[in-house]
Image (cartoon, rainbow, N blue to C red; front, top):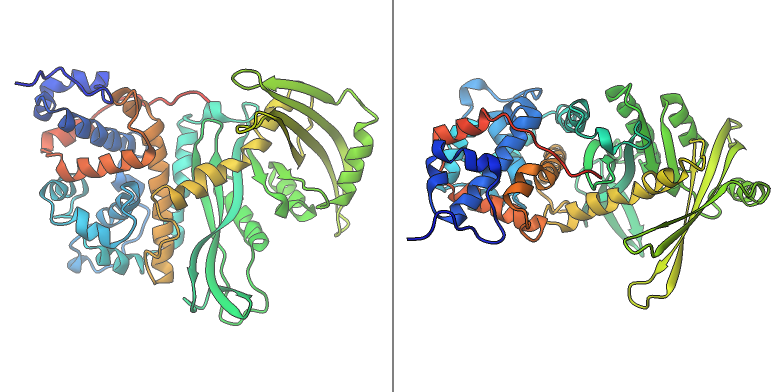
Length: 481
């Protein structure tokens, strides 16, 4: 008879799980695989319930376009299935049908948690998503990080204990060899035309590695024959207006690449009361290049050396110039600062010292007391939208570039549900419930998704077990940045 106290080295029960063994028949079983599945399912349910009040509350703002008399699946169950598609990294809509339907354990979870007889068919998702309102679901996406801010979850992740960092960048999502819809952007190379759909993303990023989607602006043409194609810059102006309306009093610092370096962006940020760091590449604004080179030589006090790294092997030389008067091409005056970080560290392969230069234009007043934090916890965090954001969603199992639907509206719904799933996955992976249950981890984020799928398909659930999770009053903590 196996010892019920024996655990695999990769898994250990959390204190909360241990205290509830007497109330949960499954937790009394000696099978460590069943225990691991319970702890993962528990972490998922409690995370959604704790931060967002459950899926019903999360999706309550959406309008159901269907006739009530013909409804089999609740709107919450349909939207949650879309989230599970990405949370489990299924990779395609048809996998919902193959892996989540026709499974007793899965059907039981739908009945007890989501109020549906079983998992809906993948085609049912597509049919309903075609009729949903995209701005309503965008409200849900935006509301998730805003809720975390209001609950002070991200309070210690702010720049200078004040500003939330929002990285904004564009990325490609869908590409077609033939026209997909009237809103496709087109690109012709060597006589071959490609039709594509990019998006502009605003993600709230943190030093600890979070990258939550805050707002999405879809870049698309208004019709088949536009006078001028839509572009990332025009999308930025639309997104900025929407972002200010959604978060009018939130102290934000935008992290932008060199495409946005210029007077119009400076004006948008000044008007909205936002701080910014914009990558300043050589030649982007020649006037600032010249002013920075000349003025920093006049004040050697605006220079600081900083040594960091696990073995103090990284050396940074930080130089800056404040109060640069800049007149843009529209004859608008701006006062900006330029901050440069010359970082030298040994190359991984050769161990030779390799210098890297970072330079930003900003509206912060840079001082010796703040310059290290501004550079390393401010400007340098722009890359997180690529690494923790786009790269994870494209190559980490979410299959961002997969065509989940041929319908333009349904495609946007799938995209936004992917953002919701990614936010939940980050909260789950970095939260104390998972870290306490799996102190040695499970190898990778993809492994978490695979194990979640196993738990969904195999864990036997009874009403008392689920109610126990829904009634749980626990604290979920995150490691400090």
